[in-house]
Image 1 (cartoon, rainbow, N blue to C red):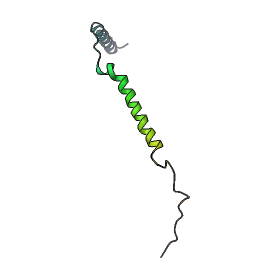
Image 2: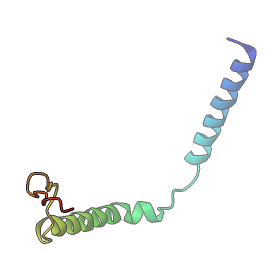
Image 3: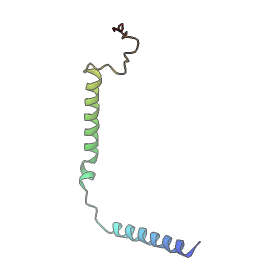
Image 4: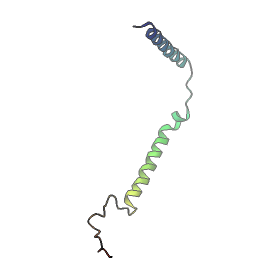
Length: 78
């Protein structure tokens, strides 16, 4: 292995070890995402499903219908 690559690898490994030791000695305080993350995610998924369910079932939108074949051209006038 090249000396530069070996030095970079040891720096990365030392940084990872330092971060792991620092996090192991710290008390973990729950953040907003720890407390409410799943609830917010489920609420968003419920709203998404409800809105699109309404759009697909209640609005009279014709999805993907083409006018080709249903419209006949009128005669050309000069």
